[in-house]
Amino acid sequence: MAIEQFIENEVKSNDVVLFMKGTPQFPMCGFSGQVVQILDHLGVSYKGLNVLESDDLREGIKSYSNWPSVPQLYVKGEFVGGCDIVREMFQAGELQGLFKDKGVPVSERAST
Image (cartoon, rainbow, N blue to C red; front, top):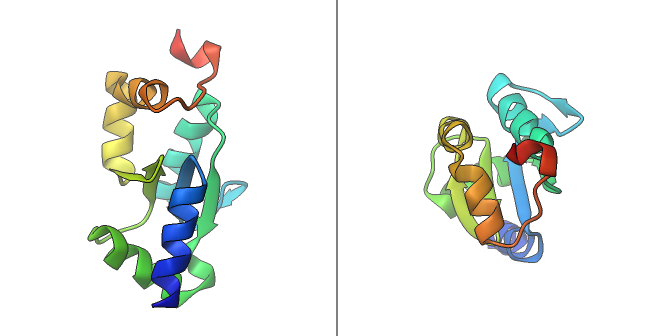
C-alpha cells in the first residue's frame, strides 16, 4: 500500500509529473525521451520520477493508472497518457491547451 500512497502524493502535490525510464536529464528509453523533449520544448516545469530505480514504483504506477506502459504523464492529478497520446496531443495543439486550461504556464515561444 505504501507505493500507492507515494504515487498519489506525487501526483497530487506536483502540477506536472512524468513517470519515466531514466531522468529528464538522461532518459533511458526513446519514448520517455520524446515526452521529455515535448515538455522541455513547451517550457513546462515538471517532476520526473525514474521507475527504473524501484520495481515497486515501476509496477505500482501501472496499477495506479491502469495503463500498461511507461512513460506516464499526469497534469494537476489527472492521467493524460503515454508517449503516443502526449505526442499526438502536442502535434494537434491539444497538449498546450490542456496546460493552459489547468493553469500550467507554457513558454510563449512554444505557443507560436
